[in-house]
Length: 199
Image (cartoon, rainbow, N blue to C red; front, side):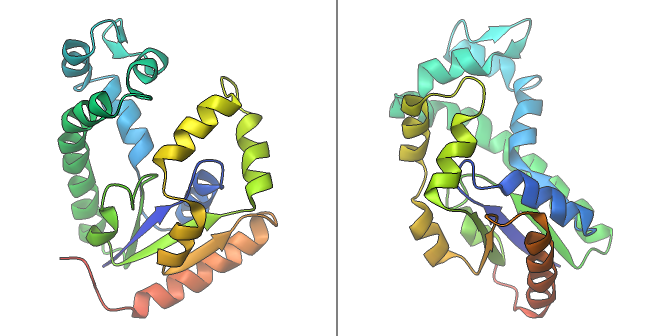
């Protein structure tokens, strides 16, 4: 089985691309959805202990947590040390299950793939991209989003140009869904023939 790492900066259309991979019959692991899940379950007590006042009714309140960690690299590191081991366990369980199902290709959707060294754990990297104008427009249309908050998020992410340079495949989401569907078909055909890279 080949494992594709799917990544892209905020607002590039990565979630939509992940859905289209799933629509094409590929098992997809969603790191963000897994974070939501553990924030509502096993990670909550440890996060509350490290950052008092960040949970409500036993679940992590993402806004409160964000206000404590987003501008604080030390707190961010501490949060990652709590969350990453739990995420790795879910990630491994997903890969084992995809392998057992006989899937030729699986996709792991990880927003900070390059930033966390995740490209070493996949066979090829797919970067989702669009124009900087379309990106800003999509993000600023979201609830609870401001230019300052967006700049803080982008500061933590590797620049799009650098991601594209390091990608095996680039998916451009500027022109609607059909070209993305076509591109996914091409990627799946090529990836099936690639040598396995991950350890």
